Image (cartoon, rainbow, N blue to C red; front, side, top):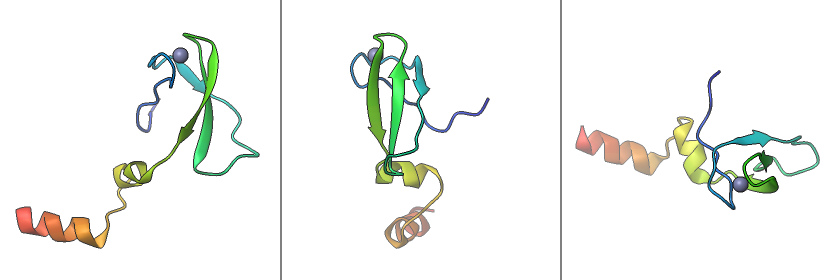
Length: 68
Ligand SMILES: [Zn+2]
């Protein structure tokens, strides 16, 4: 089962979390339930997440071409 990124509980840091229903909230916010401390927390997808998915900005491309 492929996992995109690693989601950790905002309270205890556990990775034993499960995503809740995502409807009704903004696309950039996902709700998760932590089985460890039995808490519900929201995870906001920041720009760093977009980078992991392969979206490179013009600035990043310029940096890469310089390095390599
Ligand atoms: Zn927790």
